[in-house]
Length: 435
Image (cartoon, rainbow, N blue to C red):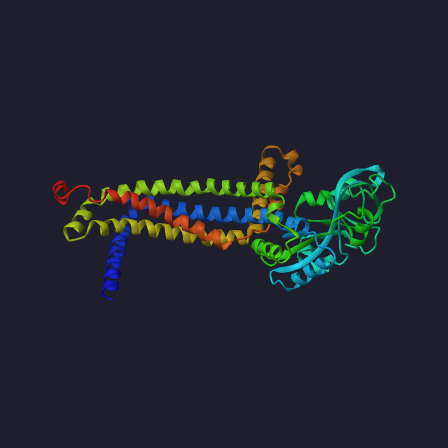
């Protein structure tokens, strides 16, 4: 109990002296340095939170579309006969598995209106997949027609693929070339499908290359050798390893693959891009830390007489150093807290921020053209990129916000610790003699 009181009294004494130094320096050069340091930390934290939130929204839009529509969280193949029934029962009892969707897949060369052609991935899924797979229905938006594959001769196309083929709902497309087993004709003009719907997702490659037909159409056209694959959706994306381990333990003959093995290079590029962006923005903290270090060294020099008096009155070297470390800590906490609040406010309202920026840029450009080239003022338009950015929902990850705020506190803390090493380099007698 006595040790706690002693520790508390030391901390209170250090805080009191540090606060006193801060109030004395409100009009001096050190006050400006401290203000700039707090502002630097604040804007650095705010910028990092906003940039990372927008980047998360941009990247997760791609990832969600890929995993919910294309790759699934886990793919399982090799289940047939009795093993298939047992596997489905096992999936029904597994708490981590949200949905199980069987599908076939083949590559095709599709011919549309006026002989327009495009390569495509044809995926055969259950006709009621929009009802049984909530993630699929959420990420796949039908922009024209309906997602109707109830008949064997109906097909739903991605928006980019439909545009390349020049078709709309009601038109007919031909799967001219189709991959499959030896019992499937490579080239045939008899594989005609009526377009019932056109969809759009958050990933352009899916829009440009994917088409969906029914399971019955897949069994009929892909051949007897087509392998049925089960796509598993999980409640937690990170639980893929646990589920795959359970599958291998219960069904050693089945082949299970994680989403991490699909689009590995694409996900790797996104991760590198995010890490490089974070590293570049973290340079803000390095610059602010250097500024705080120089400011603290100046403060130590300016307060050498007070430091000597404190030492003469019994203050230990570690306690005196802690005065300046405390000041750096408070500077970091103040700046980090303000930066977190501003960053979260901007991230939550990022759409309004980009729309406001679009309006400001438009009117600034309009008045400049009106002032110097009025005949072309009617041709001034808003930059569509701002509206595109405004449509990207920011995704705030609490762990990232915590790490950014922690770096915002540690930068001035480390700078203050380094600068405080110069405390009491001169003896008390030398300082008082100079004074």
